[in-house]
Image (cartoon, rainbow, N blue to C red):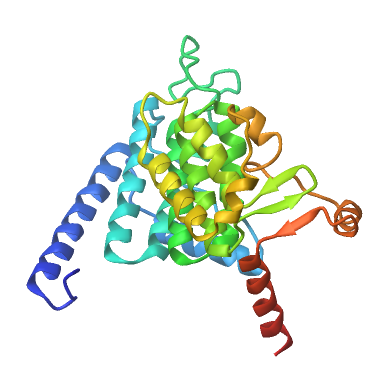
Length: 298
């Protein structure tokens, strides 16, 4: 049972979170030489999205940062996002993650395109692009925050982008986490399994790809365990789906027939598949689609 807002335990927790946030702001200023301008940047970004105009840019840093300092700055923003999440303010947490991602993007463009690292040392080629590990951690954090807000369409878009990025950077740990998030989004959307010709889409297909990638890791991550638990729950409630599971073992073979990055199908191909009866949608998804159409008509 979580404590209520007016209980001493909860008040003390909020005080400690505020102290931690103040310390993070001080470290940010010490490293970058600039005051924290996240709120001003978030306001300018919101204005730009709503009314257009000039896109906001981050202020110039007092000095060039090393690779370690750049990742530390992004880590500071992620920690501030966690504090806001602990306080229950998911909106501010998302703004912190967006600021961190913009910081990494801006920091990457200031370096030479031939030097894939923060510090500009030509002898270091450990990443395919600057800060890819930190970038993927921020991408995964953004997905979880959007799901917590119930913004499933936005979360799905970030998952799709993140899966493309993990393919380029060969980051299996983050790919497992993103596929787990995709399973969760598909379950919440009621899209358990959808067959489009040879393509398998939905929660069941995403879970199969997630677990196939997890088998390559030294040990299962919490995301892999959570995906397996959701798969068991889906099959327990819908035993008929077990017969539609795919037999391929490798993640590449599974993803070739759907479950990870989704292909964009043109309208003519979709019409042909519907006419041939090659599209099978789960009953739960049909019910949710029907309720959505009823609300639109009302």
